[in-house]
Image (cartoon, rainbow, N blue to C red; front, top):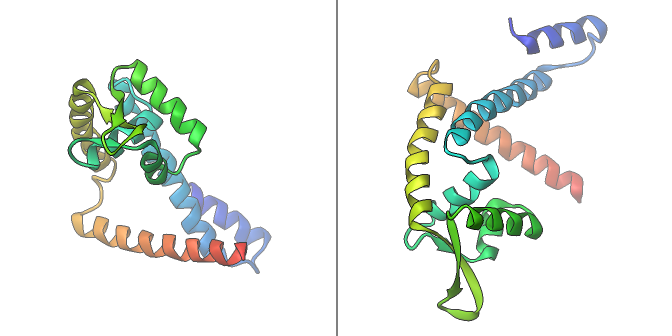
Length: 168
């Protein structure tokens, strides 16, 4: 029995008319997210990063050589506000992990690029990050992880559709 079981049992006693299956799923997903975030933040901290800095560096790395994107492209892939992104870039630039370069395609704009130090750090950190994630799910078999990922993708899709409908 876990914390979510306790809560759903309390609801069953107080309001037996409520179907709390969705509550149980969402509660477990929320608690799983918090537990995973806690584990990953320990890894980020070992490398002097936080989730925001990691997000930018990882986005630049996965963009492939030359590991550079426009600020707009970074905004699109990270889904944060413009001012937030500027602050992240400023801090990473102060840390010597990224640099602003003239955009070779448009000299009026800049691109954000990993520095050699930033590239080395994020490559090293990614190996540790993936290992941390594997450790967090080590109690699940490969097949169970695949099944869970498939079910979570389906649940995410359902939630996004429900939210889109509610907004119209």
